[in-house]
Image (cartoon, rainbow, N blue to C red; front, side):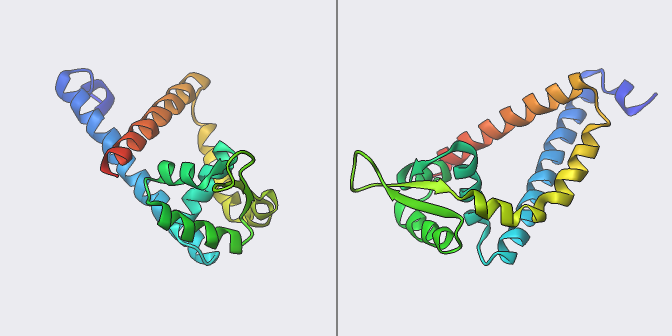
Length: 159
């Protein structure tokens, strides 16, 4: 009997759930270490890189919005934004309706200058995806998105 055949019972399912949770921890650690190394090469820190990713993915936002997404205090975000602006990764413009606020925008030129850091990883992950059917990839994508959403909720509860 294979591990997957044994996984059909309640104990087997619990074992699979344990494998999934452990794999998530391993992926999280690998991601943190990758982003820490990436940040170090750019004279930033891992929080800076994740903040930059949020602005790149979600689009222009205020510094206050970024603080909420990161579950950080506004003063911490002010310093973070300053570092990213100094590196040319973000631009700050006055908010069109509220002069007390600024709008943060991701600098595409910064992305173009730094894409080489991601090339090997992206290539490797694309190759990994060829080992799965479209249906399996749909399940993986759905699970990963929902796990990320739940982790974001847990982060907000800690903040």
